[in-house]
Structures are given as structure tokens and as C-alpha cells.
Length: 234
Image 1: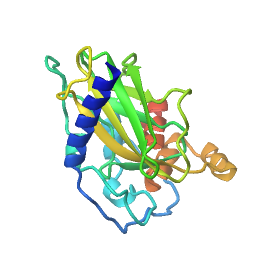
Image 2: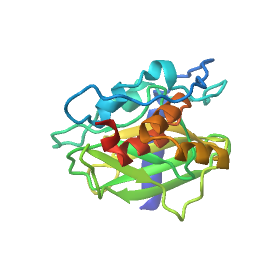
Image 3: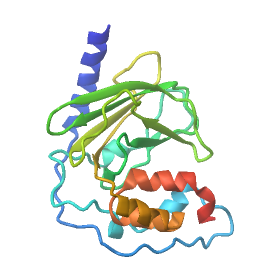
Image 4: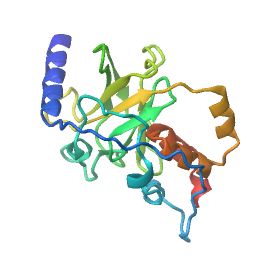
């Protein structure tokens, strides 16, 4: 049974890679000082409204000279759903679909307000060594923004610092993984977290932290702050 599941997973991965487009970028993140975000709305901002206050085309770009060998086009971020669901499922990812992070086990955020699915398959694969970490995770908590969070458990290895990982997240709509199940993918690289950076971030307000992370390409870290401090942007 495990062999059949792995073969099916490999087939799905092959389909995803078939859609891969190679991207190259010489843009660098701007080392600007953070500035607080301002809410000009009278009503509380949703997560997507807050994200729209940042011009990611101008400031969100991981500081690297080259992209991973294979990067995923916009199709990997398309809204999808399980059969019978009334609402769409989509990952909360940047336009570049690539992120830096300080986390040893980064969190993947997925918008899934209402779904009959009960679990997901999360896979992270090292671009250089090919080492693959995978785990089945239950869909247990969905917050008021309709966002669910998925992360490798503590018994899985930490991401190596300075290496790119491709992540895959398959939403299992029935009892087992099917080729038609929603599949999303992106890239992440863990970077070192120094004492100086930790102290600097501690001195920032949540809005300043969000801007700092955005300017340096830390998508997952930025979303974590947004979700932990929703009132800071109202």
C-alpha cells in the first residue's frame, strides 16, 4: 500500500514539474529601514487587505543572485477545491513563489475556509541532495481568516541553512491521495538567525517587523507576524 502511495505521489510530482518554468532574476531586496503600515480603513483589515498594502513587486524579493533550478509558475498558486466544496483552496504565497525564513521547519499557510478534506500531505525536498521529508497532517484548526497552517513535526530533520527546498502540499479530498486532489508547491530557504537580528526585531513594532520581512523576502515569517498580531493593522 505504501509503495502504491509513493508511486502515485511521484506521478503527481511529475505532473507538477511538467508545468515548471525556469525563471532568472537579478533583482535584489532593498535594504531600507522599516516603516509602519497604516490602516486607512474604518473597518478591521483582513489578511489579504493587509497584504495589499505592501507593494511586493517593489520590495518583496529574496536577496539572491539566482533562482532555484526549477521555479513554479502562477499555475501552482491557482485556486482549487475538492469536489463538493463550496469555497476555493489556495496557498498564501508570494508572486515569486520563493521565500527565505529563519524557521528550522517553516510553516505553509493555506486559505481553506470550508472544505470536506480532513488531512494534507506535506513534502519538503532538498534541491541539492534530494533528501525528502514527508508527513501526513490533519486539518485541525482554521482561523477567522480561513487560514490553516501546516508544518513538519519535531521528529523530522530541520532544514539545512543556506539550501533551497521545494515544498509540496497536497490536500487529500477523500480517504487517500488522488491525482485530482489540489496540489500546491513553492520554494523556501532557511537562513541563519543572528542575535543582532533577533534583538533588532524585538525592538520593532509588529507593523515594522512585517515591512522588514517583506523587504528581505521572508514570506513565511511575515505571514506569521500578520496572523499573530491582527489588531496591529486595524
